[in-house]
Length: 156
Image 1 (cartoon, helix red, strand yellow):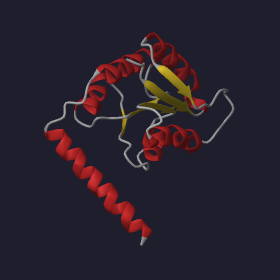
Image 2 (cartoon, one colour; image 1 turned 180 degrees about the horizontal axis):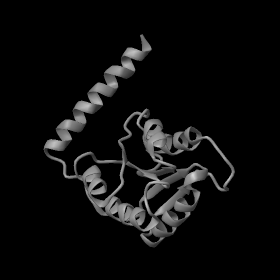
Image 3 (cartoon, helix red, strand yellow; image 1 turned 90 degrees about the vertical axis):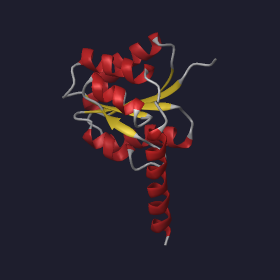
Image 4 (spheres, helix red, strand yellow; image 1 turned 60 degrees about the horizontal axis):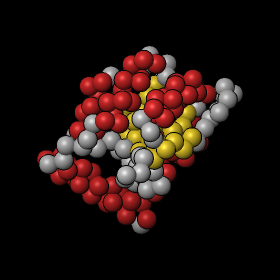
């Protein structure tokens, strides 16, 4: 079985946490695609959120992780992409439920709101928790229908 392919990206506020998370992902045996940023210079989070979200949306990678100061901006960017279910998680409960009920395929973290050790625990839980399926599949299908309807409306 090949390792899970995961994309990761951040803005300048998330750089230090991104590097810590990459070490954890390597210990899990993940194949990591790092979409930046790679230094502490001020950058615009949408540029990095777009790269990771597009990789998940297109199927290039199975999952993604995005990090900015609060996680709010990256969440907004990521959830614009078809098929992306980005969840901003601040604790182990939200990480677990994001996978169990929402089949989250992008984890969003706030570097200024979440301690590095807690963020590592969130990532571990998010990686290890499977999607529960059943009634949640029906709900995700309804979201997909809404998404398709809105995309079709936008073309008119």
